[in-house]
Length: 320
Image (tube, rainbow, N blue to C red):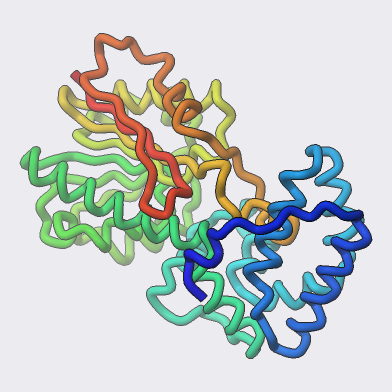
């Protein structure tokens, strides 16, 4: 199943909640028989229902129809969905979950036949999964570009996770950067980075966003500062304050990049109803407002763009 088939528009349900449940019953029957062919329609239909209902009606639909339905245990046989729902580290999008999306190696757990089939389908076709992998490539390319333009560049990744983009970066692998500071509040993630990447001028730093905001100058200055998945969880006032703090940490001519999932992502209904994974989705106009607290005279260049799948909006700023 191609990504284009998942991204195709689905007819929005126009009937009652009873018919919606009947559709999920149908999907459950097919999944119980090991048939995953209705997964694209399940994802698309859930998002169509979400868009047709008010926020209150949508939450009631999740509670009344999806949560008690026997389809959920079947879907949780897929490890990406299950980890997001169970949140073993307290939040859905943790670094081990993203490793499942990158699929650089086999999942570390034994999968049922059904779970393996849904997982294979999800990582190949889910818009969120496709864009998470595209994000890693975008970040690695940016690291390489800045390293080529600015010898002995110093860089900062905020909420770095497992910093998998560094493993894709030729500049990091070849020691062409002076330092890449990997900042995160998750000590387990930082421990993995220390084991895997300390020999590549990568410095793991345990710190919360609050600590960065309070003492950003103590981390030094950088040629590149970026945050990949953090902004999906930040309300706008905090996002603006953090963007300003990241910008202040830039050296003259330095680059800032942040990303945010866009509201057209077709996976949102499934993520909220099945994975209990709620993000804040933003358009280009909304992402551009992250820079509202930065004096315009200090910004040499400001751009927004989307990844090739079109699911993530990026804001880049270059300091004058």
